[in-house]
Image 1 (tube, one colour):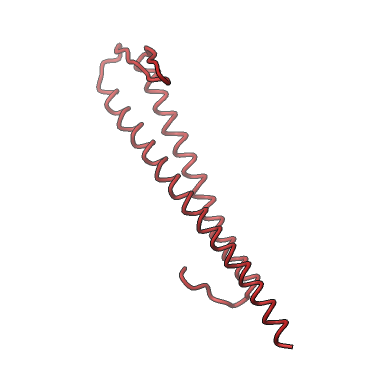
Image 2 (cartoon, rainbow, N blue to C red):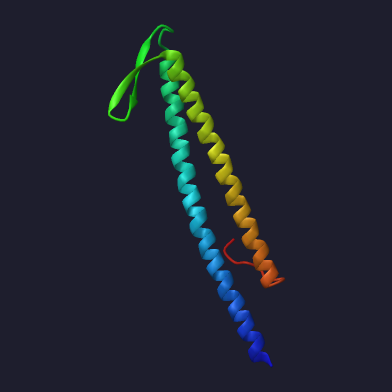
Amino acid sequence: MAAPVDLELKKAFTELQAKVIDTQQKVKLADIQIEQLNRTKKHAHLTDTEIMTLIDETNMYEGVGRMFILQSKEVIHNQLLEKQKIAEEKIKELEFLIAGRASSSYLSAEKILPGAECEGS
């Protein structure tokens, strides 16, 4: 009688381990993406800060692929602000997904093994 229960628990535990490993990999990937987005946001902010020190009539070249396009300071400023805004939105979205994955993994662990405490968290 104990053997079928042990097999069920072993199977459930194996499934749970696979889910945990998958979730950990996805969280690591999301963390890497968040770091990259933070660097992009910081770079855009620093560039914008430097551009704002120039006079308003200054024209600048924007790099597009292999060429450069002459743009006004205002156009470049707006593009940099938009870049910062997009990066911030993506960061929030990734952080929300990470929080959702962590809680859903915990809830699925509780569903499979009620009352079991997860180690390493």
